[in-house]
Image 1 (cartoon, rainbow, N blue to C red):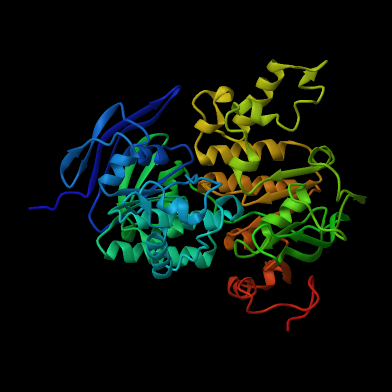
Image 2 (cartoon, rainbow, N blue to C red):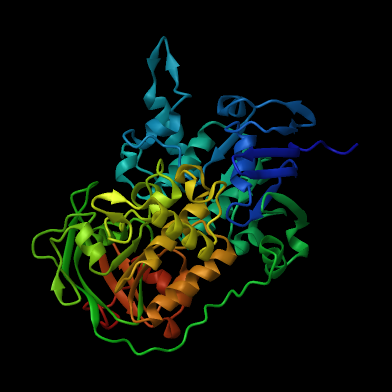
Length: 517
């Protein structure tokens, strides 16, 4: 007799205003299997997993565990059934410590007293076992996005769940961390745990998944064995057309300096050492300069200082188009040629309770085009937003009236990219611009960034994706522990060499253009 599925979701239907997010979808997860869920942004993947985790209730269909019908009313029910989830947008309390977030809701108590040391020992043992180094006492608001991801994974492992849902778990991890996570997932599956793995990264799916189910626009397309398919076939199933994986980029001679940074130093919020240490570099018109590095080596503070979100130390100097803007406001920089795609789309990119159209004009609502005498021209805002939604294929149930909070992560990202690329800019700061995007959207965003460079803008790219770094950059600067430790021509270096500098094993003398030690 055939073994029942660990989880079976049969004919699931989930509707939201203006959209059917899941249209009669069936998903079958075997015991000890890593099963990938693939689809475009807004295809319904996260919604389907949220139904399984009890965050949403389906209008039709049923869920079975080990062959028996179950009802999951909320995440508490899911956890009681052994179902855990690492969310794409982290469910963490920012003013709590890492340890407090991990044990929240399942705190070990005796006679009414919290036994936190017992919890700490278990958390640190899991951290050691799965190589997920964390500082248990750090506040969530003070740690990097990558560290928040590790906290989410440990939160699930701490609860001893048997069904593990990973929603875009590698979106903010470095190549080394991704490799480690793949190893962890394989070990978990070997231990008998069943894993549902949402990812846009086809190479990861091919490496780690046993089978892959593809969704497109809320509908089930098919399930395939990864051993008998190809990346090209999966991408065509996902977006309905063939995708070009190579960035088309012509050779271009850079012009004058657009951005010059001299002796930039930024204090750390989490330790005594400076997060950014005396960094100097420049970005010229018509070139893409990429800052590469392992997450947590000062990139966030570095970009924050340039954009105005972080305060830099005395002696630092930031020059934009020949003007010292070190102490200028964020709005001044925005209106004088800076566009910024931020690392954290929820914290710095969107106002989640605003509509999509309101978010599209956040930096422009005061322009004559959108207001007169202090009154917003709502028709103009709507018209402008509809144009960007159409051009950048931002999918949402209610169009420009959709609350940003209700959109998928990938479509939130596309909305920010549309807003920032459409504004006239001399400098584009793009931090993890393709985080959470499907291959079709990545192809489009890369084309837009190259077009921005070709039009004469300077592009400062910060990316953890080494493939993106190598394909998109004209120059690569590696940052390690807050310092620029090497400068490279992507045509004359390798991923392996970059990895050595990113890990601190090698450095060049004298910062930009220095000789190797």
